[in-house]
Image (tube, rainbow, N blue to C red):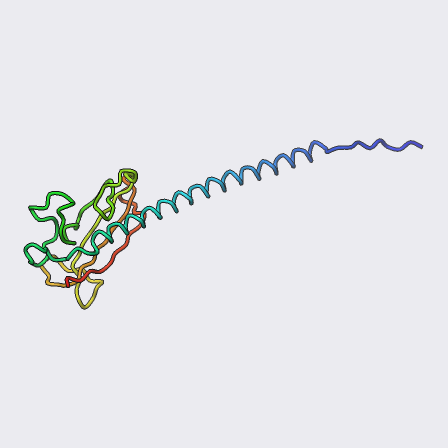
Length: 169
């Protein structure tokens, strides 16, 4: 009586299926790694954006809303004698200003973060409804400062925006 000879090892089909499964697993790991890398970059950009927003908040926190030299109601934008950022002496001077490279709380440019921009908007608010923006001639003691951080190469896609209300007093 002869016994059929048994071969040891894998058949060609089994090897092909195993190779395909290993290949799919490697491809999935590569895609996941790329996705995690992109999420990490987005998180780093958001962290930088929040840092740059806080720099503007600190810079404007102690500034009066009203011009300290003339004590007149706020005139939005920079006055004629304020030719540099260092000369900005009230909050409304920052209306419509974009810093690229961004600046820190001491108004020093941050060239290492030149890929980002800081855009600042100052608006008068209706004292009975802070959601309602009034025109520049409206007499209000409340102002909203909005800071938007974006990549320099994509200014229309903000990374982060924050705003806060300031009172004239």
